[in-house]
Image (tube, rainbow, N blue to C red; front, side):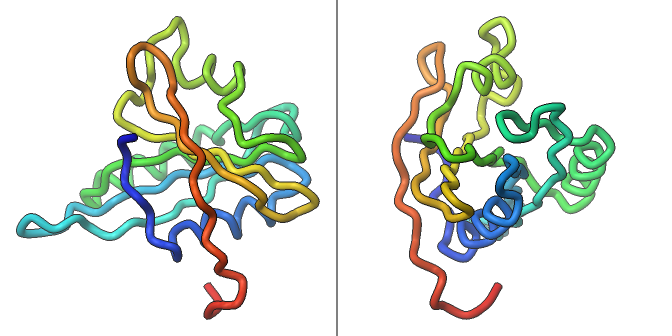
Length: 154
């Protein structure tokens, strides 16, 4: 499965945002810096406001916030590597709506970007899966959630 494996502190920041958004879906992106001399750059988690008309069952980035992220990423020489969102009190699957929005007419909008879906039940992350575009559809694999709750604060 392609896409970077994120360090536990990156996953913790992502989950912290998604749990705080409950009982609505939370969303955001993960960017990666350019790095140097053959090294990968650092990851940056960017939570975004969910402006979907039905935020308990869908997510949508605020256009102005999304534009700001893109401009800032360009200025910092960062690459978008992941779009993440939560599913509220249901499974961490890539729903038909997720597929429709990520690949309208079967054409992926961000073909080299992974999508992480985190299931949030009762305000707590319970499972996660990563989805990438391969062979004409989004292929997924469950991912392990690190136990970060007793580590140092974010």
